[in-house]
Length: 289
Image (cartoon, rainbow, N blue to C red):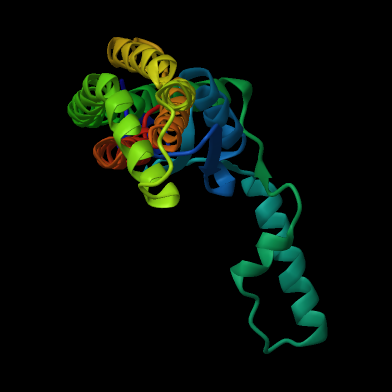
């Protein structure tokens, strides 16, 4: 079990300097990859996004790529073209306004001043990006596994509380028939008064019908089954967050049905305890990959 939250950073050396990849992950229903990379790194952003989709399965992933220059040249300048452009600008200045300055920033408007990276240079940058990305993801996964362990321990403890409440409801259920019978007798006595005798046969029939409508055996069986499946996923090697969330929805459904069927104060108290634990579990599961 792994959390969807984590952070990792990796780096690799390139001719242009250190290439650094940072990976941040937070919870999300699906896989959502977002990349931030400077324009001069070309297609590395799309390449890193492809790597993320191959390695990661769920969560909102934010990739940041940058190069810390060590004096190397990230792109090749066409010196002859730049010199010719600047000389042409100076000549035009001499004709139009001899005293005006010609800033070098004007060269930024000259098309094709920087020659595109060669295929070999692109492969070098991609290889470095892959190495830095792998290191960043390794650090990210280590953090997610550690947080996943904490989530698993918390979910396991809360699951024990839910099972304890379910066992207590199961132990209380056989006593409910007697409680229903006593309650029904008291209600009828208040309505009919002492002058009208109660029909024992009819009373037993009504109690039996009420007990049948209030039977929670099937709900308890399904709830215990869901708890078993939930616990089995604690050691799953693949992403299990969606299945855990589905099982919790079904567990909440069964507990709600038990609360509506069993009209008993003790059972109602146990239902509230179970629902409280399940709601906390649902909040935690939202961060499980």
